[in-house]
Amino acid sequence: MTLEPGAKLQKEAQVNKKEMAEKLAKKADISQAKAAEVLDIIFSTKPGEGIIAVELDAGRDVAIAGFGKFDTRRSKARTGRNPQTGAEIQIAARTVAKFTPAKGLKDRVSV
Image (cartoon, rainbow, N blue to C red; front, top):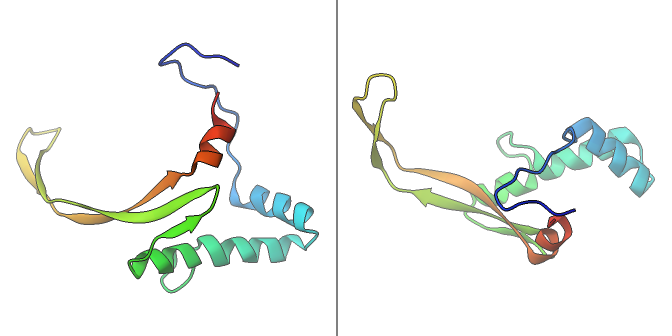
């Protein structure tokens, strides 16, 4: 498939957690409940849970070869503008999670 530069790719519906658990259960030959538990163990954002979130909280990166890297970035405090009133506001510095896809994933999804 070729797209014009700047054209948007038409996407089908996204895969949700339940559907991901179904696919994992089928591929790994495990129960759907166990597959959902595995997904929670990896991706949960509840405090103290979720391998990826816990590692990011501790200041460590999570790199999965061929897939990508999860890390955190610090944004600086800055002055912004309230779009409704036009008044200047102060936006606090914060730490944000970032995902960078690896070459293998980029190559797989490139059109």
